[in-house]
Length: 205
Image (cartoon, rainbow, N blue to C red; front, side, top):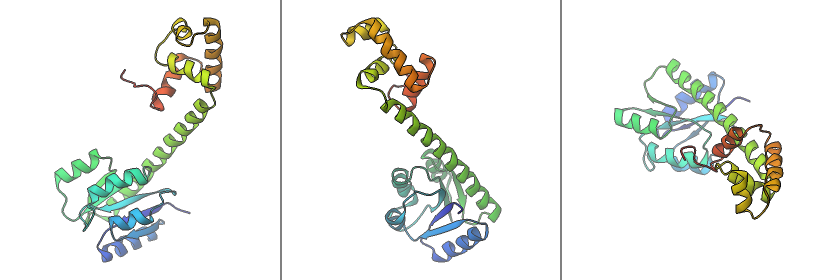
């Protein structure tokens, strides 16, 4: 089955017209009449993207963007508006929108924006899967191995770690070797990279 394009717009005729275009292009379509509607019904468990009207009664598009980032972080957002302004566009893009189109944009432009959004979805999903696999590797460490891991990625030497943990350097070296094996890395730099990807250390520190 193809990806789902979620259309959020209070204009029923617009939802129907765009929905027909997208279904004819091979996409599955789910329509919502408001921000509250999509927040209630969206699961975000399948590949897709969101076409979001910027100005709607109730939750505005920009307000909804923040809510959707929490509820369905993998789904890219393409904003559609009848009266786009530069400030709105800049604000939406800074907040992570994939694209920003006026409603009278050509079918080609709309389909192109959707294709780019779906590519972005695949990129986000791949990154998420990678992070999940790294979490699993770190979770497999014993409590003592994790203590050693936490210290080596922060730049501490074996002697310092041994002092911190009230153990011998020889024991620290054994734990360090086990950590590197379980994480599947061959260097300290790779171990640090894993810690950074998981937010365990600050890359700028």
